[in-house]
Length: 353
Image 1 (cartoon, rainbow, N blue to C red):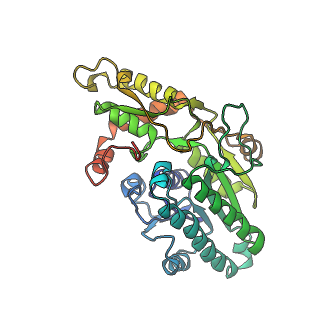
Image 2: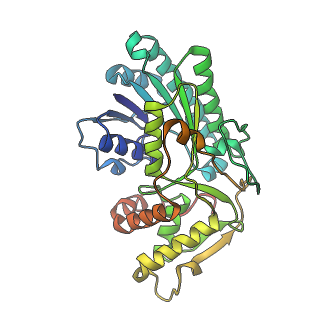
Image 3: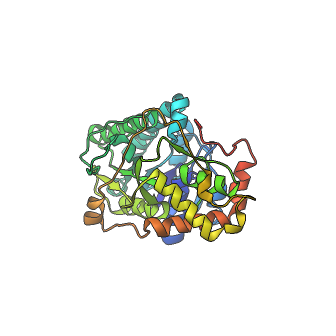
């Protein structure tokens, strides 16, 4: 099978590409615009594979997208290309509207035109898999409820609103035009090759540099943490085995407060990198600093991932502890990857802080 992956140079996208090349016999066509968060170095382990091809194309470019489909003749689409950072969406929502909504529309239209000219045999197995987020569901506040596939949408930020819109477009193209679609909504991802502005890598790298560890509000916001390589396996399971017109929630079964995450990262660094503490610093936790909360910050996200486990047999392999340990160890041994990012235009500051 040949799978076209949009956003394959991003954090989750590159994990998906690596998984497919390293663990299956399928081919991958990676379509990525290479924005600030796209990094071909994240694909170095598989870039030389004969089953991997890269196309630097913006999903807003209908002409180039059409060429890619015609040239590569994919059997399935995994759509991960998106602007994804909440703070950036608050500062500047326009790019999120363009990429996440208009870009998804363009991709759907090109995929629909491509699908209609396929043979009956190829149409029977073609699939458009749209990858989304649990943030479209909004805020669970302090309850013990979980997001299910039936939870109504109540997005809080420009980012989550743009992803919610893209989810609706995909389902509409499935119902109105008969495009064979499937949607997944995942919880917070973390792991290797994560762009440094996101919470986990930002805390690790700030701590190693002796800089403050900023936490929004009082750090009581709860997220369900999913190791990115577990997510990649789940996504491949859905694109190969998922039922058409279905939604699957993907979670890590690891609900933690943001403050708990930061404190645990500090504990891991105390164990794994005590010699890297800045001179005079007694404990990495001493760097924790509380800052003004993000506007409209959701209190709690939590995924019920029982459907994908019951119907497709997937469940995460990593616990919060094992996944976070692997993540810290990866950053400690792959300084060249993040130093190449930090030496460019990007500086180690989270948007809005």
